Length: 342
Image (cartoon, rainbow, N blue to C red):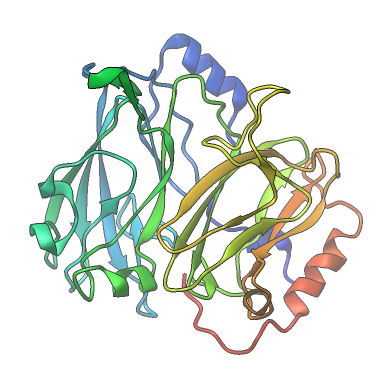
């Protein structure tokens, strides 16, 4: 049995709460892009409509893997599936210089934020990268604001995502199938920041382009605040279920108080183009252990759409019984042969 540490996915990293809070108090602004392997949580303030906000510029690279899959990364040779988690605060603008290091046309298209037709990322608007081309995409955000007729317009805060919209056709279907996707978070002033983050993408019959038992293990220590960003792609209906943990079915996944009427769930539809996020306290009320997350469409989970959320002891050690459960997961047949991505 391989050491479970070697199976850890590249979709989360422990963030220091002390450093985050200290940064917020000092008005420090961290980079807008948080890579799959980490970075620190941003601490910028939200802005109302009309405020200039802050503008940050990052460079992303689209690269092909030896098996033919394709991913986004924040540095040459660092592409991953899913791509890096991108974070901004309401009122801020993110400028992305996308470098296409493949021999196919591709793009980057966001959900949930504002952009012009030039930054649409679609062939319809002639917005894409030719092979070898670098193109700048500009995404802006806004806080809720009062519009004409005394109506309030929603802000940009939410758990969104980005993806290709040009590889293989006008809708980027081949790009999505090959792994060109990632999480986009727009936070509102006062939102609680996590200590770890994990992106989970149900893409047709895979999780992050893999199937069990090859889905990377997602980890946390007992008591850590963990953020999940769930995204759906492909052509298939799914539901996302996390064992032993639950969340509020609202924008943040967190109840605002004991009288908050938000529905509390542990299973939610996750269909193509959909996304949501939530935070849990790892092992809260149930203790450390090996907890499954999976699609609750039964033949999907039987076919390999199942992963592991490993909650270690507070000191990082494996809890009793965890190794045996990991052995069972890695030794179980999950529905035959499937292509496995990076």
